[in-house]
Image 1 (cartoon, one colour):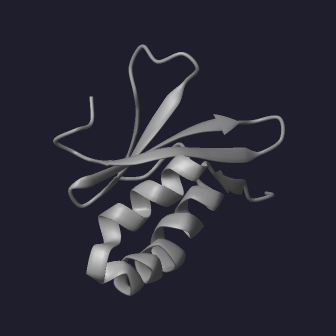
Image 2 (cartoon, helix red, strand yellow; image 1 turned 135 degrees about the horizontal axis):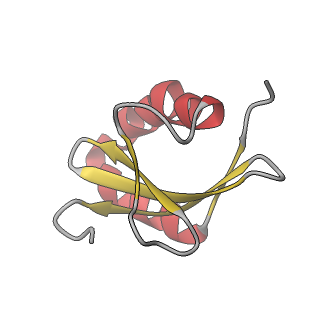
Image 3 (tube, one colour; image 1 turned 60 degrees about the vertical axis):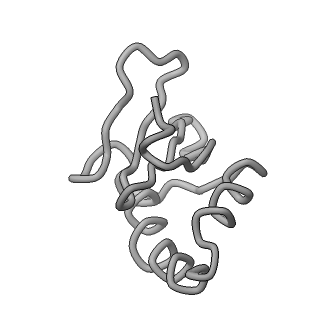
Length: 92
């Protein structure tokens, strides 16, 4: 099966820079080795993935420690569009 492509908004890039701080190399390694491959293979399933109830368009959440990565899936083009990354205290 063809993997999904990932596209990140400018907001995600800014959020991830804020999340990483002085741990940026460690965070980027984890994203590259674990998070991005999982989202490319199976964006709808896994222990860290949940669909947000009542969201239109359908939005998903990937848990990374105390942070949440929000994204939408465009099935026709097999694209995962990364929307935002926020601390769980700020996530609704």
